Length: 247
Image (cartoon, rainbow, N blue to C red):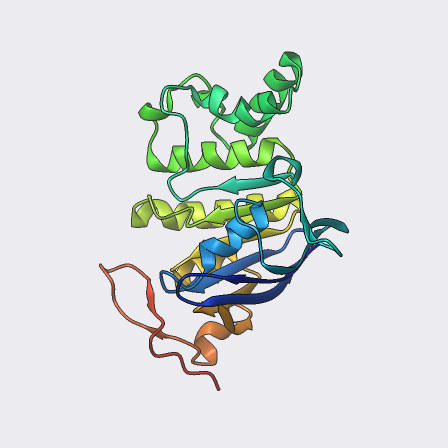
């Protein structure tokens, strides 16, 4: 289980959040640009360090304690899917997925087995030798997810994982991604601007504004409790958070 209570002074505001995510549960972070969503992911991954608080994952302290010690990113065993997927364009799908395993000095025979297994599980085994530049947006998204999952992480972080996909691809991949995250039986956190993402993929939703949690609840409560106002945005399902009404 992930348990978090942390503060971080940022340029425009002070981030102050507490949250918890159980194994197999998907937490969705919603909010405007600059509300602190991606900062939370970077703090959890160890790319940024809180000013105070505690981050624990399966009873292992990643940050905190009497001396506010922070484990480096490579020791946290966290899978991170970045918004642009961060694939190496000159590498094949196999080499991209194998990258984290090689950094951990996994032997070559095990790498061959583990990479093939995860690619097959995600339905992209036939792309194993394709260069990243030859892949579609949906295929790149799956390769990025495979790279995050293959290291058998204790926590999965996904920063706007569907942004690069068109509307039709999003509808198909949302449910598939949800199924893979639940199947992993690890805590997962997704950052998104989309109500539809939260509705389909989330178990719990947190709305952020200027580094503070202003609402938390289930995805189905986003509409029924009139929590946020939805406005059209390029015919997609994004939301405007300037008119939040909490009853």
